[in-house]
Length: 85
Image (cartoon, rainbow, N blue to C red; front, side, top):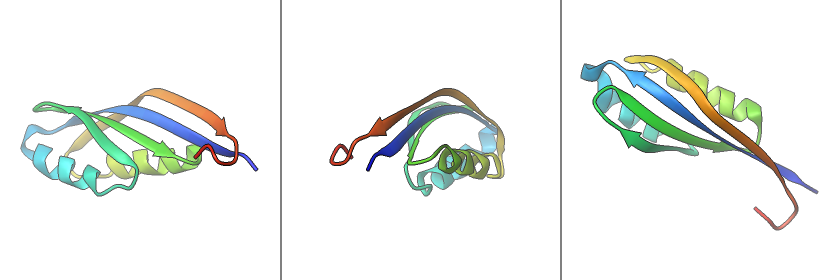
């Protein structure tokens, strides 16, 4: 049985005064990882088994107070064969 692996990266623009709160909130999202950050932008990488799972994470990030936008800049999906996980 094969499984899918989806990986996406986002650029998240944040109100500067909310950056610490937003970073902390993103780090609580399962399979999300902060890659690069500065005073107003974050790069977030998310992995999931379905495209829907990624979209749920993106919606959760957009809903964090202080997030101005979360824009997908990359998406890749692969089919993994059994044992390749």
